[in-house]
Image 1 (tube, rainbow, N blue to C red):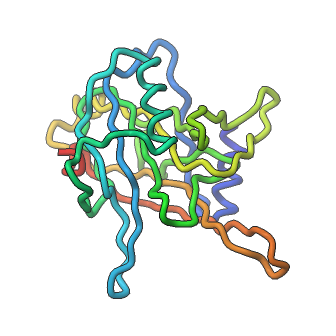
Image 2 (image 1 turned 180 degrees about the vertical axis):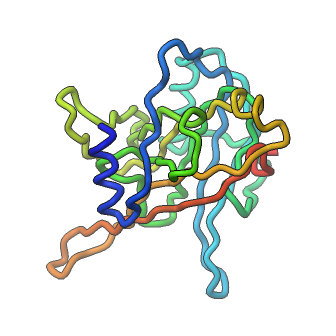
Length: 217
Protein backbone atom coordinates (compact mmCIF):
# COMPACT_ATOMS: atom_id res chain seq x y z
CA UNK A 1 0.00 0.00 0.00
CA UNK A 2 2.65 2.50 0.95
CA UNK A 3 4.86 1.79 -2.05
CA UNK A 4 1.95 2.08 -4.50
CA UNK A 5 0.77 5.37 -3.06
CA UNK A 6 4.30 6.76 -3.14
CA UNK A 7 4.59 5.80 -6.82
CA UNK A 8 1.32 7.59 -7.55
CA UNK A 9 2.45 10.72 -5.72
CA UNK A 10 5.75 10.64 -7.61
CA UNK A 11 3.86 10.50 -10.91
CA UNK A 12 2.08 13.69 -9.81
CA UNK A 13 5.43 15.44 -9.41
CA UNK A 14 5.69 15.13 -5.64
CA UNK A 15 8.28 12.38 -5.16
CA UNK A 16 8.93 12.81 -1.44
CA UNK A 17 5.32 12.58 -0.26
CA UNK A 18 4.39 9.79 2.16
CA UNK A 19 0.94 8.26 2.76
CA UNK A 20 -0.78 8.81 6.06
CA UNK A 21 -0.78 5.69 8.22
CA UNK A 22 -3.89 3.62 8.75
CA UNK A 23 -5.57 3.99 12.11
CA UNK A 24 -3.43 2.52 14.84
CA UNK A 25 -4.84 -0.51 16.70
CA UNK A 26 -6.37 0.43 20.03
CA UNK A 27 -6.91 4.08 19.14
CA UNK A 28 -10.10 5.48 20.61
CA UNK A 29 -12.75 6.78 18.24
CA UNK A 30 -12.47 10.60 17.88
CA UNK A 31 -15.08 12.45 19.89
CA UNK A 32 -14.94 15.66 17.85
CA UNK A 33 -15.26 16.63 14.18
CA UNK A 34 -14.42 19.80 12.29
CA UNK A 35 -15.59 20.59 8.77
CA UNK A 36 -14.04 23.10 6.38
CA UNK A 37 -14.83 24.09 2.80
CA UNK A 38 -11.71 24.55 0.70
CA UNK A 39 -11.88 27.28 -1.92
CA UNK A 40 -9.55 28.65 -4.57
CA UNK A 41 -9.94 32.16 -5.91
CA UNK A 42 -8.00 34.41 -8.26
CA UNK A 43 -8.18 38.13 -7.54
CA UNK A 44 -6.12 40.62 -9.54
CA UNK A 45 -3.79 37.85 -10.61
CA UNK A 46 -3.31 36.55 -7.05
CA UNK A 47 -4.24 32.93 -6.29
CA UNK A 48 -5.64 32.30 -2.82
CA UNK A 49 -6.43 28.91 -1.31
CA UNK A 50 -8.02 28.52 2.09
CA UNK A 51 -11.11 27.64 4.09
CA UNK A 52 -14.03 29.71 2.82
CA UNK A 53 -16.35 28.25 5.44
CA UNK A 54 -15.77 26.25 8.57
CA UNK A 55 -16.63 25.92 12.23
CA UNK A 56 -15.12 25.10 15.56
CA UNK A 57 -14.65 21.46 16.48
CA UNK A 58 -17.93 20.02 17.78
CA UNK A 59 -18.57 17.00 19.96
CA UNK A 60 -20.06 13.87 18.41
CA UNK A 61 -21.47 10.74 20.00
CA UNK A 62 -19.53 8.28 17.84
CA UNK A 63 -18.86 6.90 14.38
CA UNK A 64 -22.51 6.76 13.37
CA UNK A 65 -23.02 10.47 13.95
CA UNK A 66 -19.76 11.19 12.12
CA UNK A 67 -20.89 9.25 9.05
CA UNK A 68 -24.19 11.14 9.09
CA UNK A 69 -22.24 14.40 9.02
CA UNK A 70 -20.07 13.06 6.17
CA UNK A 71 -23.15 12.31 4.08
CA UNK A 72 -24.58 15.79 4.72
CA UNK A 73 -21.28 17.40 3.71
CA UNK A 74 -20.95 15.32 0.54
CA UNK A 75 -24.56 16.02 -0.50
CA UNK A 76 -24.14 19.75 0.10
CA UNK A 77 -26.73 19.72 2.90
CA UNK A 78 -24.42 20.40 5.81
CA UNK A 79 -25.25 23.53 7.78
CA UNK A 80 -22.05 25.40 8.53
CA UNK A 81 -22.13 27.37 11.74
CA UNK A 82 -20.95 30.54 9.99
CA UNK A 83 -23.77 33.04 9.67
CA UNK A 84 -22.35 33.90 6.25
CA UNK A 85 -19.37 32.65 4.21
CA UNK A 86 -16.02 34.14 5.17
CA UNK A 87 -12.56 33.84 3.73
CA UNK A 88 -9.94 32.24 5.92
CA UNK A 89 -6.58 32.78 4.24
CA UNK A 90 -4.83 29.57 5.19
CA UNK A 91 -5.42 25.91 5.89
CA UNK A 92 -4.40 25.90 9.53
CA UNK A 93 -6.13 23.73 12.08
CA UNK A 94 -7.42 24.61 15.52
CA UNK A 95 -7.68 21.29 17.32
CA UNK A 96 -6.35 20.05 20.63
CA UNK A 97 -7.74 16.52 20.87
CA UNK A 98 -8.37 13.46 18.71
CA UNK A 99 -10.51 14.81 15.90
CA UNK A 100 -11.98 14.00 12.49
CA UNK A 101 -10.93 16.69 10.01
CA UNK A 102 -13.35 16.85 7.06
CA UNK A 103 -12.67 18.93 3.96
CA UNK A 104 -15.07 19.61 1.12
CA UNK A 105 -13.93 21.26 -2.09
CA UNK A 106 -16.01 24.22 -3.21
CA UNK A 107 -18.34 23.17 -6.01
CA UNK A 108 -17.59 26.10 -8.33
CA UNK A 109 -14.39 24.62 -9.80
CA UNK A 110 -13.58 21.63 -12.03
CA UNK A 111 -11.57 19.79 -9.39
CA UNK A 112 -11.82 16.73 -7.19
CA UNK A 113 -9.76 14.67 -4.78
CA UNK A 114 -7.32 12.33 -6.52
CA UNK A 115 -9.08 9.39 -8.21
CA UNK A 116 -6.74 6.52 -7.38
CA UNK A 117 -4.76 7.26 -4.22
CA UNK A 118 -5.19 8.63 -0.71
CA UNK A 119 -6.45 12.24 -0.68
CA UNK A 120 -3.86 13.45 1.85
CA UNK A 121 -0.16 12.76 2.19
CA UNK A 122 2.72 13.89 4.38
CA UNK A 123 5.95 15.69 3.58
CA UNK A 124 9.19 14.04 4.75
CA UNK A 125 9.44 16.30 7.80
CA UNK A 126 5.91 15.63 9.10
CA UNK A 127 5.25 13.44 12.11
CA UNK A 128 3.35 10.40 10.86
CA UNK A 129 2.05 9.62 14.37
CA UNK A 130 -0.26 12.65 14.37
CA UNK A 131 -2.22 12.43 11.10
CA UNK A 132 -3.69 9.18 9.82
CA UNK A 133 -6.62 7.39 8.14
CA UNK A 134 -6.85 9.56 4.98
CA UNK A 135 -10.11 8.66 3.21
CA UNK A 136 -12.17 9.85 0.23
CA UNK A 137 -15.96 10.22 0.27
CA UNK A 138 -18.01 9.97 -2.93
CA UNK A 139 -20.77 12.30 -4.11
CA UNK A 140 -23.43 10.22 -2.31
CA UNK A 141 -21.59 10.33 1.00
CA UNK A 142 -20.17 6.81 0.87
CA UNK A 143 -16.67 6.13 2.19
CA UNK A 144 -14.30 5.08 -0.61
CA UNK A 145 -11.45 2.73 0.32
CA UNK A 146 -8.03 3.51 -1.08
CA UNK A 147 -7.37 -0.18 -1.90
CA UNK A 148 -9.61 -3.13 -2.66
CA UNK A 149 -9.30 -6.54 -1.02
CA UNK A 150 -6.51 -7.49 -3.46
CA UNK A 151 -4.49 -4.36 -2.74
CA UNK A 152 -5.33 -2.64 -6.03
CA UNK A 153 -6.13 1.11 -6.15
CA UNK A 154 -9.84 1.91 -6.04
CA UNK A 155 -10.49 4.43 -8.84
CA UNK A 156 -13.34 6.82 -8.09
CA UNK A 157 -14.22 10.06 -9.86
CA UNK A 158 -16.26 12.86 -8.34
CA UNK A 159 -14.98 12.77 -4.75
CA UNK A 160 -15.33 16.33 -3.48
CA UNK A 161 -15.11 15.37 0.20
CA UNK A 162 -12.35 13.66 2.18
CA UNK A 163 -11.20 13.36 5.77
CA UNK A 164 -8.37 12.30 8.02
CA UNK A 165 -7.92 11.91 11.76
CA UNK A 166 -5.67 14.34 13.60
CA UNK A 167 -4.37 13.27 16.99
CA UNK A 168 -4.25 16.77 18.39
CA UNK A 169 -4.01 15.55 21.98
CA UNK A 170 -0.71 13.75 21.34
CA UNK A 171 0.59 16.67 19.35
CA UNK A 172 -0.18 19.24 22.03
CA UNK A 173 1.48 17.12 24.73
CA UNK A 174 4.78 17.68 22.93
CA UNK A 175 4.09 21.12 21.45
CA UNK A 176 2.06 23.06 23.99
CA UNK A 177 2.51 26.36 22.17
CA UNK A 178 1.49 24.98 18.81
CA UNK A 179 3.52 23.74 15.89
CA UNK A 180 3.93 23.99 12.14
CA UNK A 181 3.15 20.81 10.25
CA UNK A 182 3.31 19.72 6.66
CA UNK A 183 0.56 17.73 4.99
CA UNK A 184 -0.48 17.72 1.35
CA UNK A 185 -3.93 17.78 -0.25
CA UNK A 186 -3.91 15.65 -3.40
CA UNK A 187 -6.32 16.90 -6.04
CA UNK A 188 -6.96 16.73 -9.79
CA UNK A 189 -8.27 19.34 -12.21
CA UNK A 190 -10.61 18.18 -14.97
CA UNK A 191 -9.68 19.21 -18.51
CA UNK A 192 -9.73 17.85 -22.06
CA UNK A 193 -7.07 16.13 -24.14
CA UNK A 194 -6.25 16.71 -27.82
CA UNK A 195 -9.06 14.35 -28.85
CA UNK A 196 -11.71 16.09 -26.76
CA UNK A 197 -11.71 13.44 -24.07
CA UNK A 198 -11.40 13.95 -20.34
CA UNK A 199 -7.89 14.61 -19.00
CA UNK A 200 -6.90 15.06 -15.38
CA UNK A 201 -4.10 17.35 -14.25
CA UNK A 202 -2.71 16.66 -10.75
CA UNK A 203 -2.74 19.53 -8.26
CA UNK A 204 -0.94 19.14 -4.95
CA UNK A 205 -1.65 21.78 -2.29
CA UNK A 206 1.19 21.82 0.23
CA UNK A 207 0.24 24.17 3.07
CA UNK A 208 2.58 24.73 6.00
CA UNK A 209 -0.24 24.68 8.51
CA UNK A 210 -0.21 25.70 12.10
CA UNK A 211 -1.99 23.90 14.91
CA UNK A 212 -3.63 25.33 16.88
CA UNK A 213 -4.24 27.98 14.22
CA UNK A 214 -6.94 30.52 13.50
CA UNK A 215 -9.05 28.81 10.88
CA UNK A 216 -11.76 27.38 13.08
CA UNK A 217 -11.79 29.89 15.91
